[in-house]
Length: 135
Image (cartoon, rainbow, N blue to C red; front, side, top):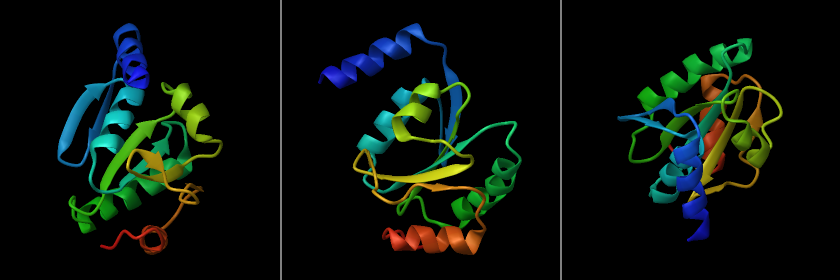
């Protein structure tokens, strides 16, 4: 695929960034990481877009960590992506407010799943349930 070649070429010429996912720690360019993680996943992937300078992002970080502990990896994968070193992803997915969470299935964003702003654990669970992800 031409798109695959674009990701590989871009990953070779740009600096790498460290990203952690549940039970998986990789150092890859974020676009490449997100592309392969969401395309090759047989379960939905929840992406948390965040920034170091964002106060509400620090609040939701704890909520996302609790969700990771409560949800089985066989039901959902959770990925955190820092926005500052990844403006291409910010542009591509329309991340205009922080924090932003978005659910991906089969490599594509789930329509209506993007949510901006801080959220508590019960509301995050309700949000995921609305898109077919059960704890």
